[in-house]
Image (cartoon, rainbow, N blue to C red; front, side):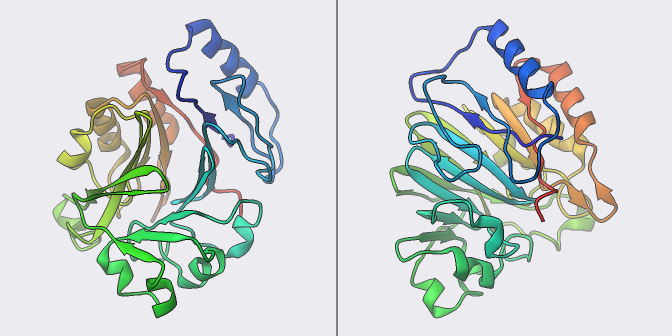
Length: 279
C-alpha cells in the first residue's frame, strides 16, 4: 500500500472523471518510496506542498498517516495531531500542533510521554473526561474536555464529539458508550469524520455530508471489516480511509473492504494509505 494525501480547497468540489483516472494512473503507477517520502494526489492544482512535510500546504487539507490510529492533518494553516503515540521522532517533520485530538485511554491512542513531547505552548488538547483523568497537571492545563454530542470551535474548525463504542456482547468491555470520542471536523462546509474505536453504531451510520472518513476495523476490539463496509455504504462519505486495522490476528482485509464498498457504490472512493511502515 502507498502513502497517500488528499488536498482539497474550498473552491474545488467536483472533478471530471478523466482527471480521477489520470490521477489514479500516476499514483498507482509509481514505485514504492522510502518511509520518509509521501505520495500525493492533488485535487486543486494551485495548492503546493513539500513531500517531506517540512513546508506544508497553506491552503487545503494534507493528510499524513503516521501509524495505526495516529495521523497528522494540515488544514490550511492549522496543524492537527490525532492520537499521537509512538514517540517524538515520528512527528519531527511536522509543525507543532495547534490542536491535538485524543479519542480514548488505550495505549494506541494515548501516551503521555509522546503527548508531552509534541505539545507546544499554544497547543490545545481536546479529549474526553476519561483522558483528562490520566494526564499530568501540566497537560491538563492545555486541555478542553468534550463529551459525546458536544461541539466546540478551535482554531477556526468546528469539532463535534461523536460517540464511539462496541455493540457485540463479547466486546462491550473494550469501549463502553460515553467514554471515548470520535470526531467530526468542519470548516468551510467540508466535513471530516474520525471514527476512533467503534463498531457500526447508529451515530456513525446517520452521519451526513462527510467529505473524508477514517474508519477503524479490527477484531476483537472494534468491528469486522464487513460491518465497517456496511456502515460506510450507509453514510456515504465521498472518500474513506480504512485505518486502525491491525487486530489480534493480524491485519483486516482492507483490499476486500475496498472492493465491497466501491462495487456497491462507485461514488465512494476507498483510499488504502500506508499506516504500518513508519516505525
